[in-house]
Amino acid sequence: MFVVAVVWPPILRTCRIASCLRGNTRETAKGIAQIDGGVIVGVFAGWDDVSFHGSSQIPTPNLDAMAADGVILNSYYIQQACTPSRAAFMTGRYPMRIGMQGFAIDVAEAWGLPSNLRIMPQYLKDLGYETHLIGKWNLGYYTKSLTPMFRGFDSFYGYYNGEQDYYTHSITYENHTGLDFWSNTDPVWSVNGTYSTTLYTERAQHIIANRDKTKVRRTNVPSIQVSGFKHAEIIHVDSQVHKTAPNISFARRMVDAMDQSVGEVFEALSAAGTLQNTVVAFSSDNGGAPFGAHATRSFNWPLRGAKGALWEGATRSAAFVWSPLLHSRRRVSHQLMHITDWLPTLYSIGGGNVKSLGKLDGFDMWRYLSQGSRSPRLEMLYNYDEWIVHASALRFSQYKLVLDNFSLYNERYRTAGGKRPWNDLDKLLAQSKAAKVLRNFYRKSQLNFPSGWRESATLQCGRWTPRSFSGNDTVFLFDIVADPCELNNLADSLPEVVVFLKKRIETYAAAAVPPLHTPKDPAAFPENHNGTWAPWLDSPLGP
Image (cartoon, rainbow, N blue to C red):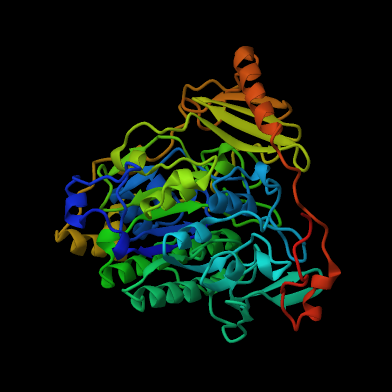
C-alpha cells in the first residue's frame, strides 16, 4: 500500500527501551507503552507477490527478513480498491460511512475524502508530531483544501491521483496528458526520467538522515509501491528473477525494486540510530490485479478473486509487523485485523488516548500484536455498496457472507510466468540489506528463525476441501478459517447463518452514505493548468 512512517517522540517516551525489550514495559493508562519511532511500508502487491508467502516468481529477501523476525499477519484485511483503503486507513472508519466505498478517484473527478473529517496526520499533530507524506495520495485533489498540505501534513512529495507513468510522472486521459508530481503545492518538472520508487526512497532517506532530533516527527511515505508496469523493463533486476512473458516480467521487476527500496530505508533507520524505537508495518491497499486495463500483473494465488471484488484475493493482504518492542516475535498470527485498525493503533503507541478519537470502526491492536493474545475483532465489514458494484460482504467469527449480484473476478487466477528455484530463498534473505541490519542490531553473526516459518505463512487450501462454488450464485457463505480459498459455498447448508449475517449487513446498510463519485470535469484538464493535473475549484462541493 502506501506508507513509510518514521516517528521520533523522545519527549513522549514513557518506557526505557532496554526495559521494553526485556518485556518489562511500563504501561500507560491506556495499557500500552508509547514508543520512540515507527515505520509503515506498503505496496500494491498481491498475496503471491512476496516470497514470505512462498512466491514462485521473485524473491523479496528484505521483506522476508523483516517478516520472519517480526509477526506475519495472515488474517489482515484491506479494502477492494486504493481510495477506499486509504480512506479507511486515514479515518479508522469503514468507507461506506463516508461515501468512499466505490472505485478509486480518477483524474478530473470532483470528489474526495470529506474535508470535515479529521484524519491521521491531524490527530498525530495533536500529539506534537511532524508529518510528512511521500508518494501517492488518491483521496481527492479537486480543491486545495483536500490535498495533503491542507490535511495535516507538513510536507508532501508525490502525486495526487491513482496511477501514473513512473518515469515521466505524467497521466494521460484520452488525449489529455499532464504532470502529476508535486513538492508541497508546487509541480516538480525536473525529475523526468527518474523512476518514482528511486525518488521516494531518496526522499525518505533524506528525511531520516536530516531529522531535527529535538522535535517529534512522523513521516508517511506511501511510495514503495507497485502499480502498473509502464517502462518497468528499465529497472535493474538481479539475475534471480525468472524471465517470463514481458508484462509479467516487468511487474516482477517492480516488486524487486520495491523490495530493494525497503531494504535501503531500513538501512537508513539503522544508520540514524532509531531502529530500537521503530515499528515497521507492511501492507497493501488492494489485492493484485492480474489482468485488465489497470492490471499490475500481480497475483493472489491461491486466493480467489482480484482487485475490485470482495473475494479474499482482493481484500486479504500480505502483511507483517516488525519491532523490537514486540513481546512475542518470529511467529505467524491468524488474529483478525483490518486496515481501519491502524489509526487507533498508531495513535495509541504515539501517546494518544484512543477514546479521544470518538467512535471508530478500528481497534487499537498494539497489545494484541505485541503479546499474541486474542484479537478484539470478532466482526469485519469487507464493504457495503448497493449503488455501484452492488456487492457487500461481512465476516463474523469464522463465517464470511458475500452478497454479489455480478460476481466480478470470481475465479482463482494461478500465478503466471513459470517457476524459479525455491531452495535459495533463505540464502538470498541472509544476503539482503535488511538481514545485515538485523544482524548488526542484535549483534549476532546469523539470524535463527523458526524452522519452516515460510511454510507456516503459506496458505493451504486443503486437498480434501469440498468444492461447491458457482459464479452464477448471488449468495455465498464460507467458513473462511477452514476454507480461505472460498471453495465450498455453505449458503444452502447453513441458512440460519446466512440470515444472521444478512441482518448484520442490514445494520451497516442503515448507516451507509451514497458514494461521492462525480463525472469528469473538463475544467480540470491539464491544458487549463499549465500542463498539470492540479486543483481546479476554489472550495469543496456539498455540505
